[in-house]
Length: 272
Image (cartoon, rainbow, N blue to C red; front, side, top):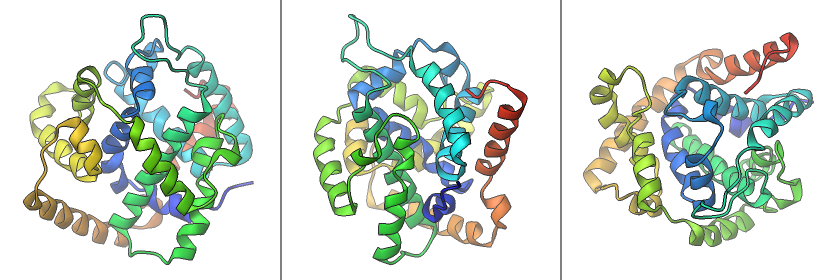
């Protein structure tokens, strides 16, 4: 059965990918998630070494969680679990972590929800509270597609805000993770490197614009009212473009990636 999640589907737009770097920073702002990614022994999942594959698998997960049928979710969960089995701390790790920890998955899901919510507000008119309440309830799939039990998802948006405010106390980005995330913010993983001077400053600007102030401070990224006005103008322009773009084009690459996952399942090919 397909989950009809309009908030996710409308936020799953090519334009929305501009918020991706900020969302990764938010997720990795939790030390256990940050070091889990930074120290990961899953070599094929390291974005600096395999940027295309890592981007494909991450966006495919979002497409499956938000737009996929139950059988597709089950297949992707099984494939992801095989990769996550190796993501756990060692005696030398600065913090303890395990990719199967449902509390860490809840944090990641909460960041993803917050990111999709931010994209929605940036690209569309503000919806009424009832719409947001209904869509929030359906966004549990961002975590429950993996090991997070459905009942761990905060009961409503008010409860979510309380969870979010409390969880921010655990956010800390140390110099090691900050250096790693500065690369994410500036898209230094993009090949060839000759493109970095062209796209780096723009991506850093957009990423900083999407970051909540708490995370900007942790990342030591400067921001001011002038930059905010430039960011607002940019998003206003992109919102107009997004609204007039046909849905099938607007949902790229997520719809294409969901098709790819289904094709891989039928052909017996690796999903992640």
